[in-house]
Image (cartoon, rainbow, N blue to C red):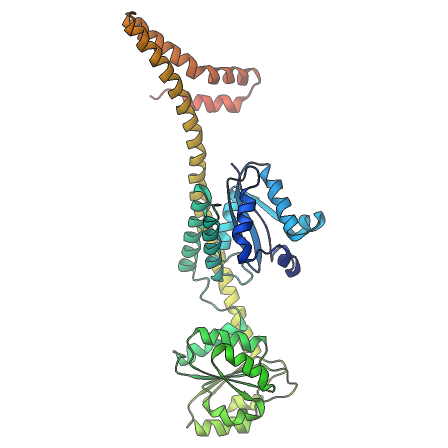
Length: 417
C-alpha cells in the first residue's frame, strides 16, 4: 500500500491559505476519524501547525485523490489554489520529507525544536483516534529518533536566529545565570513581548516594563509577573537594571547619557548590558562610551543572527546524510513488510493445499491403499498445485518476452550450489 504525505506549508502557501487549511486541536480526533473512514485508508496521521498542515496516509493509489479532495474541501480552496499550494510526496519521498520536518530542516526558523513536540502530539492524538497502525507508528517513531540524532550530532538548534532570542542569549553569556538579575524592558510591542517571554522561560524573577502607556505596560507585565512603570519614571528605576532592552516607536532617543551615568553611580559602577533593537535608535550612542556599559544595537545583533544562520545552514547540510541513512533504514523495513505479505499469501496457499491433500491421503491409507503409491501421489499433486500458477505466468512471460519477470524467476528458483 502506498505511503503518502499530502499537505501545504510556509514553503508553498501564504498565511491566509494555511489558516483556512489548519486543523484546531479541539477537532483533531474527529478529522482523523473522518479521514480514516475514507475508502481504502488504512492508517492516517494529521500534522497541523501554524506553518504546515500535512496528512500522512497508508492506502491504495485511489486514496491519493480522496485525501486531496478532503483537504481542498476543508479549506474551501479552488483547483487553481490547490495546484499552486498543495504537494504530494509518495513512499521514499514522503519518508524523507517527514524526517526533514522532524529535524527542523523544513521549519520557518531552521533547526527549531518545537516541531518535534508537535509531531509527537499529532502522533499521539492519531493513536487515540484509531488512525495509527504498524507502518505509521514505525514511521513516526523513526522520525523522532532521526530528529533527536540530528540535533545532538549537528547542534543545529544551538545558535539563536531571532533578534529577541539572541538578545536574551547574549545577556546570559555576559551574566551567566539570569535568575538573580533585574531586567528592564522599554516599550510594549511585539519585540519586547518576545524578549519578555524568553526571559520568563529562563526563570527571571525581577522584570520591569516601562512604556508611554502604563495601561499597555501593565497588561504585558501581568503575563510575566513583572512590574510596570511609565516611560517618564524610567530614570527613577534605571539603576536597578542589570540588563535593559529597548524597542519603542520613538523618533528620538528615549535613554540619554546623564540618566545612565546617574544609574551607574547608584550601582557603584556594576556593569549594565543595554540592547537597543529600535529603528531609529532608542539609546543615545554616547551611552556606549561609558565605562561598564555594554551597548548593542540592532546592527550588532543582526550580525550575530546572520552568523548563526550560516552555522545552522552548515549544520543542516551536515544533517542531510543522517536523513538519508534513516530513510534507507526505514525503507528496508517497509519493503520487508511488503515481502512479508507476499510470503504469508504463498504459505497460506501451500498450507491449504497440503492440508487438503494430506487429509485425502490419510483416508486412502486407512482404506488399505498402497502406502508408497499414496505418498508418491501426494507429493506429485502438491507440487503441481503449488507450481501451477507460477508456471502459467512464466509461460506467458516467455511468450510476451517479459525478460524482467524471467530474470526474477531465475533468481528465485535457481538451485543453490
